[in-house]
Amino acid sequence: MSSLFPALSDPSSGPPADRAALRFGDRSLTYAELAGAAGSLAERLPGGGARVAVWATAAPETAVAVVAALEAGVPVVPLNPKSGERELAHILSDSAPALLLTEPGAVLPAAAGGVPRVEVDVRASGRLPGRAPVDPVDPVDPVDDEDPALVVYTSGTTGPPKGAVLPRRAVAATLDALADAWRWTGEDVLVHGLPLFHVHGLVLGVLGPLRRGGSVRHLGRFSPEGVARELNGGATMLFGVPTMYHRLAEALPGDPGLAEALGRARLLVSGSAALPVHDHERITAATGQRVIERYGMTETLMNTSVRADGAPRAGTVGVPLPGVELRLVEEDGTPLASYDGESVGEIQVRGPNLFTGYLNRPDATAAAFTADGWFRTGDMAVRDPDGYVRIVGRKATDLIKSGGYKIGAGEIENALLEHPGVREAAVTGEPDADLGERVVAWVVPVDRHSPPGEEELAGHVARRLAPHKRPRTVRYLDVLPRNDMGKIMKRALPS
Ligand code: MCA
Ligand code: AMP
Image (cartoon, rainbow, N blue to C red; front, side):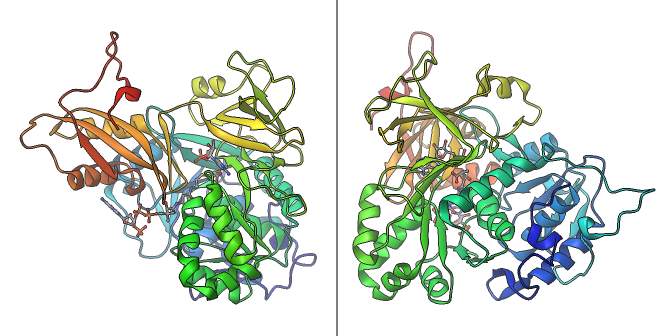
């Protein structure tokens, strides 16, 4: 099996064993310690293709668990530790993990009770499978690069989240393409405060530095103060979603120290949603730095980026990464003949960075690809004659991007309909300066004289699905606008 982390599997060619691999608050692990802890845990993991779930708190245990599983060839299902009961139950029954890896003492909800649990000991010491002497009678499981590395759950327009199966080669391909685009090396120290149950925070933000032999410092919780402290203390790169850069832009006028710290970074990278040009401009004006945007998806990992050595252009997501084919197609699937910076088409991509399919959902997998293997992203874009891609919207109005999280209107509508005080519900996204989009619930109450309150409905959704999916605004109506077929006409909702 080819290791995803040469720095761990072959210490002779990797970074010094005493280099910090990761730091979360005041807890850190060197490469030697990470290899030891992951090696010890790897011995306790199942074989035979079984998956393990990881309770992905912002803690070193999460990194150790994921590294151990990947080095042992065991696919990982990262779980949002704030998942509500309904969502967690769905993910666990769909992915059927053999074990749940957690930090010591983690308090788990009832929905996780049925899965045997292993607590991760970051101070343990063992040998990673790839480093063990091979016993010819009992060889380690053969694993190849098409085998799954991760199953990451992502929302669609309707129904519960789907598990995107990401093979090992996709993780390797995307991280190596980013290394090329960003001149990302083992000398880089990354800082971020992203959640570790999505691609951005986990694959780019943890596996990325470890594949390079560099370091990651996780803030636990994002804050401009934390970013400034780490950039002043040797961090070279910052990853964040636009909401985080917006908060930095807001803080800059009153905080010259923050401007200085951001000015010191080698690279500021934004992704998961569009960073408004106004925020780009405010950050550049205060710090002299240009934020680089890259574009990806759970299913495709990274597709494009502004390159570290390329011309920065606010409002674009740059050019296709090495190995990624990208085209824009018209409504009927015909590729646009030329790129003029104005004609809009849906982005389709092909390349080694793509997932292999949705777990247990051959129907959804088939619908996601064209006959010749292009993945339909659902994102609408224009392309400049020199290849730069500018995302202008999304095909599906029922997908909301809030704080960089993708949220399906349908799953929230279903959760709202389970509330006894709700007769009908529709969910939309509205522009929000901080979150990009805000989840808005339109509710027809059972009793119009005593409708369930906004907080009650937000809590109801947060407990069932996840806190970031909760409606931030609730609007009450006597009736939802519907067409002759009875379908809710969301565009006719009063705003
Ligand atoms: C609030 N909270 C609640 C409730 N209300 N909990 C339960 N019930 C409620 N009714 C809690 C929340 O759990 C949270 O706790 C705290 O209050 C604040 O929550 P919230 O208001 O949602 O946080 P925020 O300040 O709005 O968060 C902004 C954020 C966050 C930090 C930017 O949205 C974020 O981390 N976004 C990152 C999303 C991301 O990584 N996306 C990548 C996927 P506590 O504070 O304790 O948590 S996209 C991807 O991977 C692709 C490949 C790509 O391109 O990158
Ligand atoms: P997810 O499914 O959560 O992985 O989110 C993927 C989606 O995020 C993409 O399909 C895009 O709509 C959006 N996205 C990611 N990066 C960017 C970006 N830099 N600019 C605009 N949209 C982005």
